[in-house]
Image (cartoon, rainbow, N blue to C red):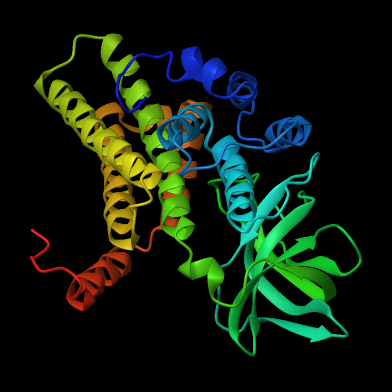
Length: 345
C-alpha cells in the first residue's frame, strides 16, 4: 500500500509474509463497524504475532493500513493487540495463545491507578481512564504509579477484581470500541519491565507510528470513496483538483511511513522521527476528511452508512494525536537535542 496504489493492497503478498494476514483482511472486510468478528479471529491465531523492528516493519504497517482502509473499528481493535505482542516480545515474555489484548497507558485528571507490592505479589487499585474494549478483552498491559515511577503491568480482565467504572461512551465514531474507565480492586498484576521502561524503551516510538499507519489506512478508504464518486460523473475542475490533492497527500504519507519502517528495522526510529510521522499523517487525515466533505457534499454523510461511519471513526481515532501540543513537544525535542554537531535541517 505504501509503494503502490492498486486495490490488492498487501493481500497478494501477505501469504509469504504472515500466513494469518489474508484471513484477518477478509474478517475486517465484513466487520461493518463491529469489533466482535476481529476479536474472535485474533483469539484463533496460533503462534507468535509479527512484531515491528525485525525486518518486516513495512509489511506489518501496510497490513495495519490495509485493515483500516476496510474498517477502522477492525484496525482500532487489532492494533493494540499487536502492540501488546511487541511489548511482551521486547520484555522477553511469552505470548499466551487464545487471548485478546489492550494497552492502557493514558492518564486523566482525577483518575489514578496505584500499584503496591506485598509478599512478592503486585496488585493494582484505582481507576484507569481510556481503556478501550476493556469489557471484551481477556488481558491488558496497563501502566500504574509506583514509588519508583510509572510502571507497566500485565493483568487479566473479566474477573471480580476489575469492573468498568464508566461506560458512557457517546461517540458516534468508533461506537463499538468504547473507551471508558476501568476500576481495579486489588487486581493481581505481573510487572512488565522496570519502572520507566515502558516509555523509555525504543519500541515506544515504533508503536506510535504503527497507530499512524492505521490512520493512514482510514485516509486511503476516504480516497477510494472520493475516486469512486468522481468516476460516476464527469468531474469539473474543482473535483479534479481535490482528487489530485488527495493523491498527492497519500503519496507523501506513504513515503514517510515507508521511511519510518526502514528506520525501525535498523533500530534508528527515535522520538523525533516518530513525532514527525505521526503529526504529518494526522494532518493528512484531517485534510482528507475536509476534501471528502467538500468534494462529495452532504449526501454520502447522510445516506452512505459505510462512508459516514468511516468519517466519524477516523475523526475520533486521529484525536489520539494531540495536535498542536504534540508539535510543541516536537519543538522541545529540537531545542533540547544537543547531541548532534549539525542543525536538524
